[in-house]
Structure formats: C-alpha cells, structure tokens
Amino acid sequence: MTVHRIVSPIDGSVVAERELATDSQIENVLAAAERARTTWRSTPIEERARLCEAMVQYLERNINVIAPEITAQMGRPIRYTPNEILRGAQERARYMMSIAGTSLADLSVPHVDGFTKFIRREPVGTVLIVAPWNYPYLTAINSMIPALMAGNTVIMKHASQTLLCAERFSEACAAAGFPDGVFQHVHASHGSVEKMIGDARINFVVFTGSVQGGAAMERAAVGRFIGVGTELGGKDPSYVRADCDLALAISENVDGAFFNSGQSCCAIERIYVHDSVYDAFVEGFVDLTRQYVLGNPLNENTTIGPMVNAGAAEFVRQQVSAAIAAGATALVDESHFAAAEAGTAYMGPTVLTNVNHAMHVMREESFGAVIGIMRVGSDDEAVRLMNDSPYGLTASIWTQDATTAQSLGDRIETGTVFMNRCDYVDPTLVWTGVKDTGSGIALSQLGYNAYTRPKSFHLKLNS
Image (tube, rainbow, N blue to C red; front, side):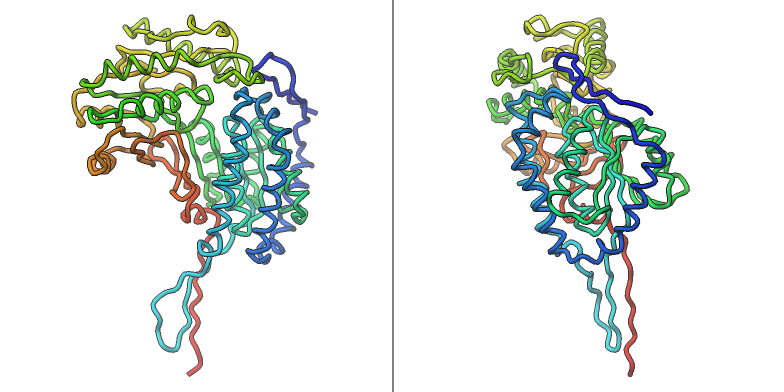
C-alpha cells in the first residue's frame, strides 16, 4: 500500500493522506467505465446536459468548502479561489454545454438524388484526464465537460498536489445522478497511469503539465493509435507598443505576470516594451508590483500567496540569481516583501531589467513570480524576440491600432493573440498552442473534435 500526503505550501502541514490505487482497483475502474459506455453514448444530449448542469450546481453550492480546500492544497489566496469555480461553471462548463447540440450534430454533404449521405460524430469511448494543480477545476472542466457531453465515459487522475479536487468532482457527479461508471477518479502513481494508457479500454488521453510529462504520455500511447491531447509549457510574451494605453498596459501586465504567483499556463513571462514608453512603463510596473501583499493565503488581505512548494520557488530563485550574475538588475526583489523567506514557498514578486535572451529567465519557463522586461526599438524586433522561444501558447500586444495588432499576430508563433488583454481563456475561442506547448485543442466548437471520431453514412436508396 502506497500512501500519498498532500503537503500544504502555506505551513507545511498535511492537508490529507490518500492511498494510491492498486492494480486491481484500477482494473475495477476500467471495467466500470467499459460497462457504462454503451448506455451513456445512447443517452440523449439533453439528458447529458441536465446531469452536467446538476454537477456544476453542486460545485457552486459547495463553494465555501471547496475554495479553502483549493487554497490549502496549492496556496492561491482565499480572496481569489471562489472565482475559479464560478468562472469554470458560468463561463466554460455552461458554454460548452450550450453548444453541444450543434457541435455534435451530423454533418451534411451535397445532396445526390437516390442517396442519403452524412457524417456522424461518435464518442471515442473512455477518456483519461490527467489534470494539473495550478487551476485544478478550470483546467479539468475544459476537457471533462466536452468529453461527457460527447457521450464518453471519463476517468480523472488529478495532480498529486490537488487530489481532493478529483474527489469533489466524483461527489458532484454522484449527487447529480450520473450513472455508475460514467465519471470516476483514481489516485494513481505515474507507473499506474502509464499502464492505463496502454490499456485498450482507454481511447483518448488529456494531459496538462510539463513538457517532460507530455512526452511520457505520448510514449505510453505509442502503438495504441489513440489521441493524446497535451497542453504543456509556456513562456508567453507581451509587447507594449508606443501607442499603448499606458495605464492599462501597466496594470494588466502586472496582473498577468503575478496572479496565482505566476503559476498560470498563460501567465505573462517576458515583456518587450517600445523604447519611447519603456521608462514610464517600468516605473509604473515597479510601483504597482510593490503594492502586492505576500503572506498566508488564508488571510483576506493577502494578494499573493506562496508558490506550490519550496522546490518550485527555489527553481525561480535560481533563475533570478543566474540572471543577476549575468548582468540583470532587480528593480523589485524579495527584500521588499516581509513574508518572503529563502528555502520556503513564499517568494516575493521579482522584476528584472537589463535582461536578454542569453538568460534562462527569458527563454525557459519560470512558472513563478518573476518577470523580465526588455527594451525594443521596433515591431520587427519585438516579433523576432517573441518568436525566439520553444513555446507558443498566448501572446499579447498592447496598442490602440487593431489593424497592426492583427498584422503582428499573423507573424507571431502562438496559439492565441491578445490585444489589450492577457492571461484569459475565452471558451468561445479554441485553446491551443504551437511548438513545445503541445498539440491539445480545447474549448469552442472545435473542442468537441478530440472527443469524437467521424463515421460516414453512404446510403443508396432503392430506385
């Protein structure tokens, strides 16, 4: 028996202990999902939507319990955690439910007399969702809702730091009245997940996490001929043009860089500022960053909490130290924040200037509370630097010229182009990336494609 302990980044206390599933327990989960497939796929979309809505309502009703649980597990300030459930329910889950009917409808083809022809979307079968800890409900909903609405059974394995979230999803589905086996969760080791992916009863895998983790998922699926949807690393850039709304650019870039302690898939991780507004932007950015309150995330006045663990904070501290040794200047560092403490998960927001692309902090994913700001002289220089990355999830452009923003966006290697916005997931638009960010496609009407396979009907009528 292997026991996993969830250790809180707040104070090192043990939030919960859970036994990891044995081979026989995982076999029971796989068998239950297999048994439920036929009935669930034949369940009308309207009934699937009714059950999913009841599940979402359960999460909303229990937000006062779930929110502090999120904070205890991964450290986000309690003043922000309820919004994860509200956004997940109101923006993503309900939108994806609302478009299911049209997104899953048969596709018509040109009519030919004497024939009935169409393309039907069928569920792939059983979907394994390996969910991350940084937004444990939002990211899971991205795949859970369309997978279920498309008629698939779902097995969720949540990140080891946020195991309780998977249990809450199971509770919500049970309270909603889902049939047995349609949604299940497992607490499993990496080795067990690898075995599950190799099992013929798993038909699609969704993974959000590191590049190394995504590569492991794809290796486990080799020879299975199943889809593996991945959202992996990011080093999302921001470009502040000369014609920006400076106050807006400052406030939104600070929030985009440091919300959730920078632990967001689409957090801003590097900023390029046109020379003509560079000094004013940096001054305003520094002033606003110094207003953060680092501390215990269970306190309502805390605006930035600890990172997920001391190891994650140490990784970022090493990036900062290496950059400073190579010539970078820290305009804001941990010395400004009383609660910051070396060797702990409490790391204060750090603002670096005099940075360049020879430094790891400008090219390697940080996933933490640090930002590097570079001066640029032109759009062309900004685009070249923005593309100088192995990743491509989002990129933001701060300008009052929408035509130029679209033109620059066409040249930037990224999954989403923002203008005067950042660090936001719009469920009406497809969520995807390029390069080492992975091959996953989520949300929007395209988000249903991964959870279905096309079947052609070619019916010749009697003459």
